[in-house]
Image (cartoon, rainbow, N blue to C red; front, side):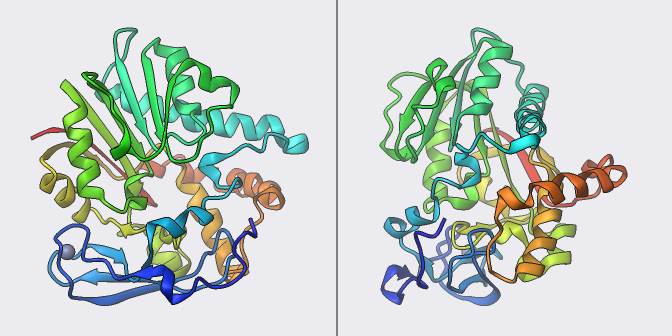
Length: 318
Ligand SMILES: [Zn+2]
C-alpha cells in the first residue's frame, strides 16, 4: 500500500460546497491522517454552519482518490492466506456477511423472486452469501473491477460508478449501501438515483459510521471512522436522516449499530493512537486483533446497546 509516498500536492485538492445543503461557510472540525494506509498528508474536516454536516474540505478531487483504494483496501480484499489464522479470518468475514443478511431480512424478506442491488459491493461476498441463502438475483456495482473473483459468477456485476450504469426497466426490492455513502462525492445524486431504482415496496438499507458515538469520543483525531482521505463526510444521528429526507426518502428505522463489527473500530482506534499515522499492517495485526476480541467479548455481547461506532437506516421513497 505504498503507491502514495508524498503528501498530495495542493493542486490535487478542491474546496467543495457542503454536500448536504450547498452552503459554503463552516468551522474547522478535526484534522486527520491516513491512519490505516500510513500515507503522508493531513486532511481537514469542517462542520457546515448551515446544516451541521461534517465534511472533508479541502478534499482530493475525485480523479485523485483512486490511488487510496489499492489492492489491500479491506472491502476489496483479495488476500486469502492468513497462515494458521485463515479459518478464523474466513469465519469472521463470513460472519460479517451473515450479519448483513440477517439485518436486511428483518426489514425486507428475500426469496427467489427478489432483486437486490449492492452499491459499492467490493469483493461481492455479501451478495454471494445472499444468493446462496435466498436464491434472490443479485446485482453489484463497484468502481474496482473484481469480477474475476470466482464467486462473482453468480451475480450481475457492473464495473464503474453508479451514475454511469443503465439498469433499463429493472427495479430492486432491496438496495444496500454498506459503508458507501460516507465515501461519495455526490451523495444527493446517488440517493436520488437509488430511490428511483427501488421497486414498489422496495427498501434501501444504508450503514455508515456514527460520529456521535462512544468510539469517536474515545479516539477523536485517531477515530477509524475519519478514514481520511477516503471519507468525504462524517454523519451523526441527525445529519444522516436529514440528507435522506432531502433526497426524497423516508426513514423507517434508524439503528444505533450496524452489521460491521464495532470492535474493528475499537481495535484500530487503539492501534492508530500507538502508530500515530504510520499505517496499520493488517497481516501483522491479526493476532492481537483476535486476542483483543476474545478479551472484550463480554462487552461486545452488548454492542447493540452501547452506541459504539455505527448506524444503519432503513428507508423507502417518501
Ligand atoms: Zn450544510
